[in-house]
Length: 312
Image (cartoon, rainbow, N blue to C red):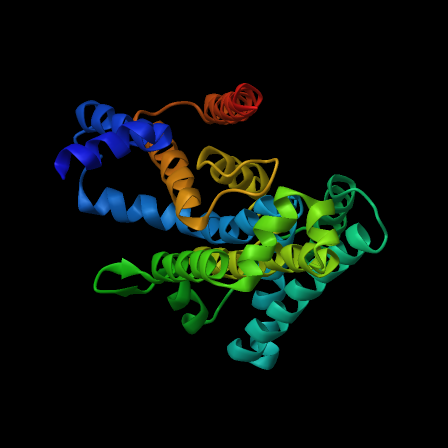
């Protein structure tokens, strides 16, 4: 049995990379394998990890959403600004509805308007960022609500709420993709759009739904980030799109669509999370960090493309 597990691990290149990173970092930093550091790392990756759940569905369906960072920032601002006026529960509910609406607009422009998703979500990213700047006049908005701050900083048995919420969303996403008709049709649409359409699948519905999924998870992630920081700002989650897409692709979900799952995205998030944590522990300049992450993303996409060409 141990031999079988060992062989399966060797087949999973990203899992091997993760294990190698853990071993190397355990020698380079005595702090790395401590419980405090591990919990801190999971907390750091939980916000973007939650957004990555929606992005996983989108990429499996053959698309992606560049506006998730702006949606997250705008959502955090809306919640923090509404909370003193309407209460926390109502502020969260309104923000969720607005998050869904933003995704619905993107989905309609792509499917009904037949505009390329890259153009739509790039434009949406700029529009939502502009709206975020306008409603707060470019200034951060601090929350005075203890209940709101508790959501982002409270714990259960030492595990932060954002980490618990993240893994709940991972489980929901995985079940949705693997165990439901919706998931099967998402894989079919991403695998071959025309074939899926000809077999009777309502491909437009599924295309719209993935943009709702990305915006909804971005809205939830943005609210969690604001509650964790106690402050909402237009530049919160600025690098979300790059980080989330990187995690999904590094985890093994193909940009061509039709394959991948939420568990693999967790693997990708862990690799990026350990990398970011290692940068911090080893005091590597932030400028280098961004460049290294970009190089890793290019390398993984290139390897994925090379593998597919040789497989065919």
